[in-house]
Image (cartoon, rainbow, N blue to C red):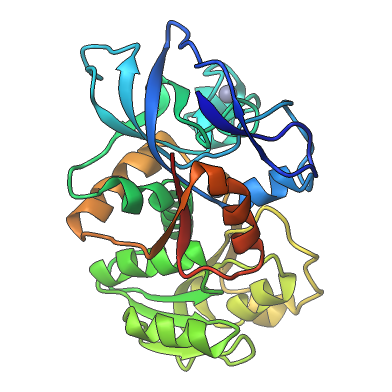
Length: 326
Ligand SMILES: [Zn+2]
Ligand SMILES: [Zn+2]
């Protein structure tokens, strides 16, 4: 099969012939229909995350058709999605508590195992999600990481229907999350850098959109931050009502500046982080996405253009999400 292969981090992807993968007994073989490009792929290829497997086929937002390893629940020809969480050990203290997103020995698709920048991929049968027919291949792919994790952030922030919710930063995840919030009749307040992002937020139904230094005009019930910046977390915290929650959707923060406990955290306000995702998050979000006909903006690349897709993401030169179609 044809695949985009990372021989070693910091070396450009190469399009090569690779053996078609063989599914293990608990896995399925997928013919890849589309694979979304995520910023994490860029961190892996650029060596900003430590290498876990070399050579590696990246890609963790896979839409594929089951060609082998079918089961009664997943018959041949089923169209499924695969996300970043590719498996768990099921036995660590976190798995036993039902906190699978915090598993001590997780499998990450396109990082600890090969992913979807290829004509074929394998995935654990218990970590694939049959896709509703309302979501086509191209538009389903970007939902599988940015969408699911954005949705989890809303859960971690404890959003209830009708809440006033702040989104701090307006990238791939936030622009999918706002659609879910609008379907829950939430008022959405967006603080983000760049006039074009603010215009996009307003066109997607934001009640208010301001720059990263503007304070939302109301006290927020809930907030989610998407930037790797502790200053943004404090800006979000200072916009919350008593009992409000800010969820941080970032793997890494530069630092958290000193802040005034009496004024900002007292009153049972909370700061929470968002780590990975659970299978329930994936299933629930994909159903909501189908119900509200969520259609992210996408730009298509061929497998041969995988390198160009990553460069475009790095340079912020694409409209919407990049999707590789082999
Ligand atoms: Zn575990
Ligand atoms: Zn991702």
